[in-house]
Image (cartoon, rainbow, N blue to C red; front, side):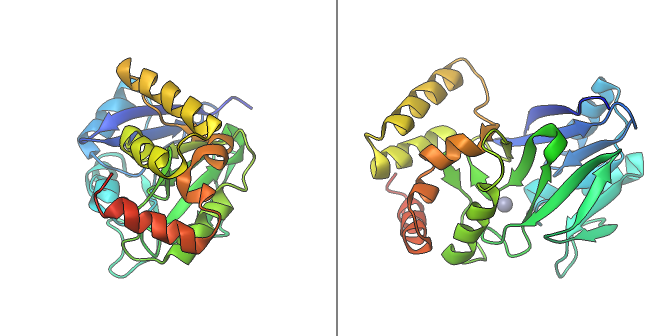
Length: 243
Ligand SMILES: [Zn+2]
């Protein structure tokens, strides 16, 4: 069994696009579709034929390329259920479901909070979880639809994955998140070390995605909050725009 290959690239202003490819079966999935043209260009450049789209949630910067890519490649769109349905959906997925890319198992985990239908895709053989707008490096998605309690439970599910699991977040928000993290948990050695490392990476023009389960358990202010109530307070504080 060959190793799964993951290709990540910037899309729109601060999104990341992701492709995962199984060399044995030739199957390739795009996780979310922030920019259909860019995803097509990147998969073509790799010589990968797009066979699947996996959407984490309905927001247009995650589903905007579904229709274009489906028309171009005839790929299967797997997305969580919602009314109205996500664009081009073929297979509705929900937490607890599993499917395969080639022979590799993909587990769907429900992570309501940012939106109510939000799911993440865990690919154990790749040591990877595509977390959409649930968890960011040092951050968490805004609570547009769900509650702090839901987001806290969603964090708990993702951060219960093996420590070394790579978390592929959908945006590069790290330095803004770092400022907030230092405001609430400043002085914590693991956090200060991480922020210094991320700042140097950004100066070199590098992505701070993926992060890992272990890193977020040690440094993410919304996990260090320790409870749903404090997560909610911190989310409101960050949304106040003071940081
Ligand atoms: Zn979103």
